[in-house]
Length: 351
Ligand code: 1HN
Image (cartoon, rainbow, N blue to C red):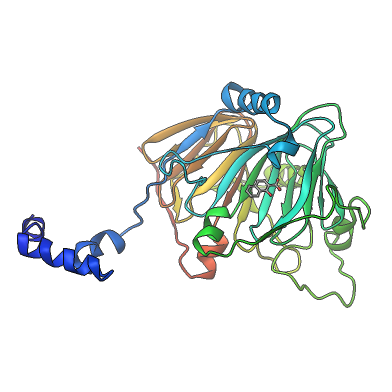
């Protein structure tokens, strides 16, 4: 109290005015807000309901403009705590993208890293660095920094997916570069599935040395993910805090697929209620199968397949599955780990 009374004194206000003119500011006025005892964030928990809202709205966008006009026809999932900032968390952007039968989303590349998690439709494609990647629901596809990518839909049905990119992080670092492709569609230089066979079969070409900061595997098919989760859940007990939770890995390093975005998948067996867990990474989730709810601090979010929700970092999370449920999630955990900032905490039984 005394601090604010003093800081309101006319002498101080006059002094602050002199400082502002010289592009200076008094640290003592903001120190407490800059260096907090614990994370303090504007990021809010929020859910976008797919069946009720997202699908209809993205379909309406499909009636209003073509993929060609839009370049990418995407609805940005803006965090209510960061309106107008194209941000779902402080570092990550998420969006829902629609590509209609016959459309092409033209080739380009940029320094932002991206992933797609397929929500609906079957058989459209993304071409990454000249390799066509077929898309099925639950597949995770990466388009790492500075890789050429275009999307196309030669099927009869609309295709919808979740995009996650490190746009806010790259913006903060002022490191955005982008370039349009020469052609609308890249010509394919490798057959379908080449990178998966070459790098995801526990075999590497003998002289191959990982040269990039990203996984050489561009597609993590749901068929394999599901098989792993099913096997784990048949053959052991769930972790009390995570259920059966896995991280997607770069086979060359054991690390994340993209240097800035960590990706995870977890199976929560029916009627499991996880113990409270928190970590410093704000997280974007989508439900792949089943139903349940997540309590994030005081907010309760009920979710079902294809709903997308965001939770702030350092907030106690408990998940309850009403049927066997699978959650995909993405966060900036690799960035925090690289900087030695990432923390987690496991809580005890809740009331
Ligand atoms: C982008 O390249 C895609 O390739 C989607 O599908 C969303 C948002 C901002 C910048 C680039 C895509 C994007 C994006």
